[in-house]
Length: 180
Image (cartoon, rainbow, N blue to C red):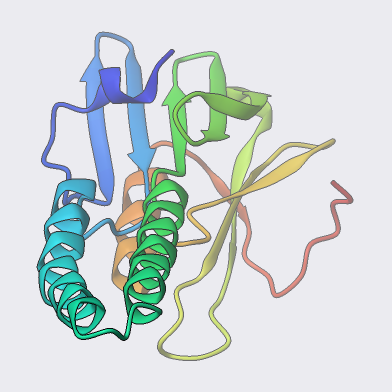
């Protein structure tokens, strides 16, 4: 399933919940405060004076400045694109009566985990520092996957409160005995 099909909520939200019949879908994604459109406006705002100065110096005979200004803007555009791509990463948690499915990826799932609901639980590792959030993992007897590891403290606590209503918390420890 394409991840954008689940998005009926504002793009600024980090933890999204959608209930469709017996299935609850929780989408967790990094804070994406600047959209690609905002990044393009920033790039254009920086390109006008940079290329304007480069063209001015080129007309005065200092032509090497113009290609360097273009190279600088190309490097900035590449960095903005890379960061924007990284911020498209998300975890999609599907909860049904029998199954928990966790998909991780950018626009389509790259990895998936399936847990039987009655055999799985939530592992909460307390934060090491007051600014960090707790580590959250869904596990059964054989495997474990971490969820929301890119969230800040408030967002992690929001996800924890959502998952507490859906999953049992069997382990509340500093380390895991499960070898995943």
